Amino acid sequence: MPVSFEQIVAARSRIESGILRTPCKESQTLSELFDCQVFTKLEYLQRTGSFKERGARNALLLLPSERRANGVIAASAGNHALALAHHGRDLGIPVTVCMPIFAPLVKQTRCRQLGARVILTGTNIAEAKIEADRLVELEGLTYVHGFDGLDVIAGAGTLGLEILDQVPEPDAVVVPIGGAGLIAGMGLAMKTMRSGIELIGVEPAYAQSYTEAVKAGKPVTTIVHPTLGDGLAVPCVGVNAFELAQRFVDRVVLVDESQIALAILRLIELEKGVVEGAGAAPLSAMLSGQLTHLKGKKVVLVLCGGNIDPAVLDRVIDFGLVADGRLSRFTAVISDRPGGLAAFTQVVAEAGAGVKQIEHERLFASADMSKVTVVCTIETRDRDHAASLHASLRAEGFEISA
Figure 1 (cartoon, rainbow, N blue to C red):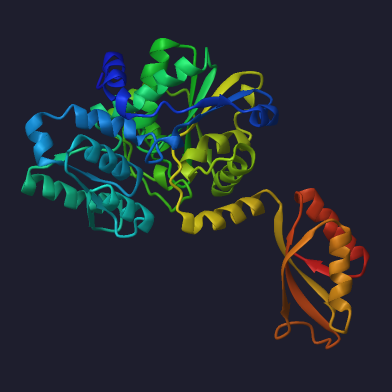
Figure 2 (cartoon, rainbow, N blue to C red; figure 1 turned 90 degrees about the vertical axis):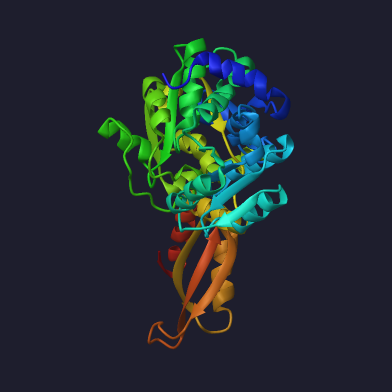
């Protein structure tokens, strides 16, 4: 076995002084929504916004003194880089991070603020790692793998021990899967303590590296498409992580982009928390309807990260509103004479809907000069409300098309 339960217990004591004990609270709203007892582990409240701090700190503390002096390096687009930078500064260990050139600017800037040397190289993590490996040889740096290093997996496992302290006898734990280091460490920790726990992994449909590894019986490189769960977009799961995880993971759920966006929106609205796509993945699995067997049970959702790019958050929220049927766009043909638009918007108002935007389309509209086509973005309560609005507009003689 690449990591032992005893190593996780030791890691817990080792990192305790530098890691926050994040809340794991029962959510009344989510419990009512899913007809089970739902607890949310708010790991996105760590100082750099993710669970990655646990593994990073454990790995850094286990470095021999001469390696500490030389410093460490990693290829990462975000959370692992931030975690290493923060704890490297705290422990006086130089940190270099190789980030793809398209890594979010906010994460590049924060890593530099935390004292890390940031090298932008390559268009993806695999290409960034090539440069990191070169610097390992050239400068004598120690590479700290973000999800497959044994010390990192052990550190991630401390999250499982912490949950068991906070939630007595959970029936199921839902965990995001990227490189599989988190679910591997948590699986070992939690199932050693309570073998009956159901361990459920969640992957984006656009990044199925663990699912493909299970099919092949070993880690394999897969095609990964851009996803809102960018922290889970790992082309190949870790060898050590997979060896552990496959022993403990009971099932894996795939979620699509609309489900991830809707989960981010739900957490903002219901839990007042801003969580990134990877962190929202467990809730998206619940929303997808694939875990209805958990009704009546005690379930923990691991919200593992909150580093969503502020520049895209508004787009994600709008995407979530569309997925929820609360924001829709359609075209309508209305009179182009005075009062025509007013008559249209009056029907919308009487239906209790809200107008977000209306654009007139005259160039490619009907040859009937007395009419004009308008493109409408409308806010409604849900899909049924939107359908009711369309029916009301048609009843008043307006031509509607989605």
